[in-house]
Image (cartoon, rainbow, N blue to C red; front, top):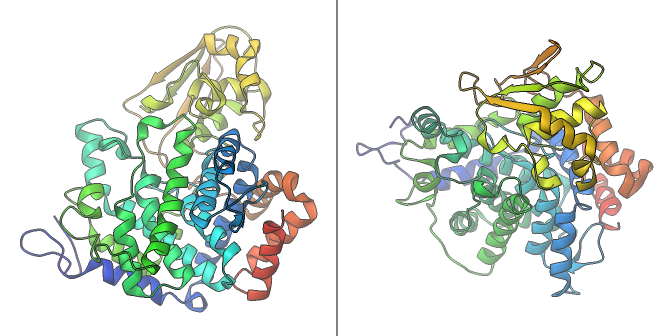
Amino acid sequence: MSYSNNHETSNGHPSGNVTAELVASAYRLDIQAIDKKTLTIAKRMILDGIGVLLVGLEHSTVKILVSYLKEFENQSGVKVIGHKLKCNLPDSAFIYGCAIHAMDFEPMFLPPTHAVSPVLAPLVSIAQAYNISGETFLKAFIAGIQFEASLRIGAKTDDATAARDQHHFPFEKQGFHPPGTVGTMGSALASSIAIGLNQEECMMALGYAASRSSGISGNIGTMTKATHCGNAARSGLEAALLTRHGLTASSAILETGSGWGQVFGGAHFNFSEVLNGMKELSCFTSPGFAFKKWPAHTAMQVAINAALQLHTETHEKGWIKITAPVFKYCDRPFPKDADEARFSFQFNVALALLDGEITSESYNNEKLASAQIQEYLDRIKLILEPTIAPDFGAMIVRIELENGVNNLSDSWPGHWKTPMTAEQLTAKFLECSRVSIGDHDSRALINLIDEIELRDNFEAFKSILFLK
């Protein structure tokens, strides 16, 4: 193993208390000292997350969860935004985390993980119940996001080995879906800061959260996938609340034997990446986060972008060929429902070719069952090409029609290569939010989030959301 900054001993194990140093760095974060670019990106992630939350609250998965929790309603709890339900803080965080992720519409990091839902969800719940400042909210969000990203970066060596030697998509090497493993830890750190735990208590909360890390990749394409993010949000917040009540756990859970680093990071987990990342807040710019243009899996963004440019071409007859990286879980020639359709190369290309646009309403069972879509699915041939990098940042997708017309894409408006502009992000937010809170409040939220660290504006931010 290779660890820098004196975090390795002769037997390959980290020296010192990495967990304690990580927590200390997070608690030292000063919003006033963070560079403007990082703050701007963090605020854009919050804005995007709130927009996706608002539209996701109407998803069928969330309606099932609300119906379930309604049976055990806690009248002294917090009101779930957009629903006639009150529940405790962890359960509200669970719903919010599921809502943010239900449409697969939140930003993506590299190495892959969905970082926003596990961290933003508990903070929204905490803000409903506690009088925290916008500055604390922003600090907790930044710390939680960076922690998740650093954990993924720390595992890159073993991820790369699995991808090369076992032909796994990186996060599949042990079957875990990253938001369910790193998300719980990010949630616990953010929640601990937000509710005012001291550093020692936060270390205990991380110890508990590590034992709640989970999420099996075999559930990709089902309603359960969103619960990986929801459970991460709930477990991290629960960890902070239980620690405040005196529950104990390992205070060195990152580096201890059979701790998070070894179990989820692998034999070559790089602890220095975790520590350096929090000190530098590097994830917000290196590589940064890709914002999704359409409510579907990340690889679908590239495929849709390629297919949309062929919408006006003649494609009513003949075969349609898709050449893409080896993402076996995205080879779904006839998805059985709208949730699975978000992970189907075949469906997304057919949808883009036929409709020429993709919206939040595009993914529904009626559309999937339509004669036109089914006829196109019958004609589509997918080739998963091993020579194409199975990497969201470097992948390509080619669409070919039998008449010889073809198009290739390696990005989308929002990809790391072609970042989403402020205007495009605003347009996405308005599309997601205006149905539930109206155009006036949507635009007010944009301005308030831009100044979220100011307490008065944060109170106004809360009043718009939490009264809905």
